[in-house]
Length: 355
Image (spheres, rainbow, N blue to C red):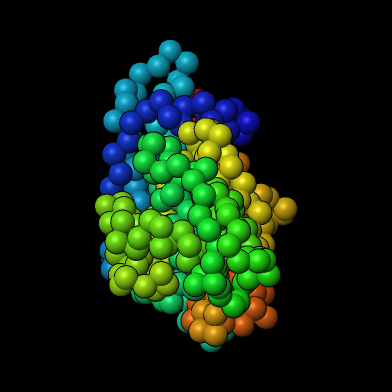
């Protein structure tokens, strides 16, 4: 049945329209439930009291849990639509199992165990279910700011507004220390836009980023992403700036949707991101597409995890030491556990519906 469910996930992902209802919660308060959830319940009276208290706490959460309502018909000769509708809906927040809440508590504990001042966002790309922690807090973006620039360029190229084979000249005015390959090459050499985007994403090339930013202008990139719901990207006219975990999740989900168009350009771009340097390691060797960034005061990664049911994972911090990557990987592994436990529960629910 599990393989059948995966078939439905792939085959029906783009058939049915959805209506998304976003309910505000916070991973911080999400995990407050753990102190209540695991008390022994000895009789019916205590059980009712426990359920009431759990419901009250859930209503006060600040994390984002997305519940998706499907607008398609419930009738189907083979029960396909019922299963699909079930899979596309998030588990209601008040029905999250103790196991899921426990893993969530472990995620919070991992973030609190360091002095990295984390911001965090996890989002399941099929149901829209998400967890977040300090997700609206802007943090200096460092090189993660190169990701929304790259996605903007390729999506505008897809519309015919940008020519990826246009040539720009690398001059001394773009020379930049730090990461990249152009700093080691001769001045007055020409590079195509697609080459520069590749350097910017794969090698985190600062000079390539400055050339692209000068060509397409901060104002245009900022407006593009504001129209998609971001609030902190390119707030000033500087080629650098701040970023929130929510904003990073928005542009990584946009990248995933662009990847699904399966054009030659979208495949080229996703391969750039798959080849980028990673702070977050892929659980169990799963492919991820990401853009990381670091500076003296920041260490970040924003990724699409290409699991059977893909998800976005964003981890931002206000410490710039790559030796702290172990915390990122600990959180990544816990999120992977949460994601799989979540889908195991969904599959069990939806299998019962079909019977």
